[in-house]
Amino acid sequence: MPTLQDVAKHAGVSTATVSKVLSNTPYFTEETRQKVMEAVKALGYRPNLAARALSSGKTHIIAVVFPYIYDAIFKDPLVMHILEGIEAASTAKGYNILLSTPRLNTDGPEEAYMQLIQSGYIEGMIAIDNVPMASVGMVAEVQHIPVVSIGYHPAAYSVRSDDETGGKLAFEHVYSLGHRRIGIITVEHGINFAIAARLKGLYHAAQDYEISPADLPIAFGNFSTQSGAKAAEELLGNHPDLTALLCLNDRMAVGAIQYINQIGRSVPDDITVIGYDNIALSAVINPPLTTIDQHPGKLGEIAFDMLMDVLNGETPTSVVLPPDLIIRGSDAAPR
Image (cartoon, rainbow, N blue to C red; front, side):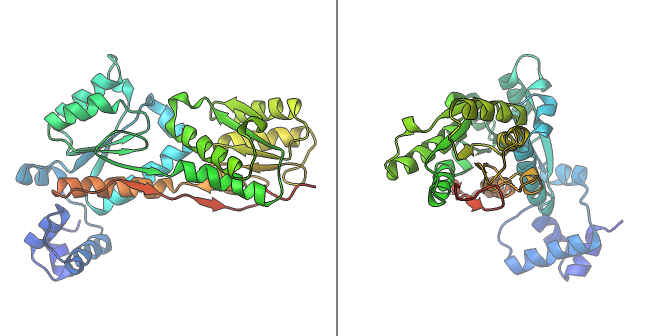
């Protein structure tokens, strides 16, 4: 097993330099940091976290907290992509991740998060989605634990996708293809700021083309494939002349495609279907799904890097990441 001394020798620096670089100590040049990290990767070095914690007073553990319960995390492909980004960035800096869900404590999610913050195990926290940030942020501030949020949170440091622009991109694309009879599959957005922003961007784009939101039929799902199929059935049953469906997440779009195929119609020959999120499934279904990519892996990486900046005494600015339209095979001009 490679040692700290092996890394130092491979990088051509002192063991003290290796130790400080792996502890994210500032004041080293990027060239030195790169030498050390390349040596770590080449040798497969794994730092002794217990020894580092004793010597530095740092645990090199960050918590990633969710509003979901237990295994629901692993059923959400978007969250998994975010986790992949956090994990990649944390591994490069020698940090471990502790996942936290409400099931940690039967008294409720907020109590579980409070206990985690007060435990002394973690150096910082990344909060995803609808975590109760007001209470968490207050206790974290008292405990001097920095918190970075991914999504629409009132935290001091946050990163999120520009969902309003994403909704606008989706509508502009189907409009440019010639579609005017457009239906929307969404979720009840009162409790989901991202969905509300996507719908807002979509409606603004429609109004730019002098189309009233009232003229865009809407049906509601719950993010699942099955609910997308049911929403498509409702929309096409009530509005059989629709030529395009804008779905505000990919899983509902997949369900819509399945329903359209089931009734003997074709995507995209008869109906265009657009998704949102660019999950892995969207590239392998038939036809491949045209969708909006909000770069969840990048969101995770940025959140971790932002947390490291705070731990190093810096004051990062919040980030709004622009989405991209990914054109595949589920869209075409209306016939």
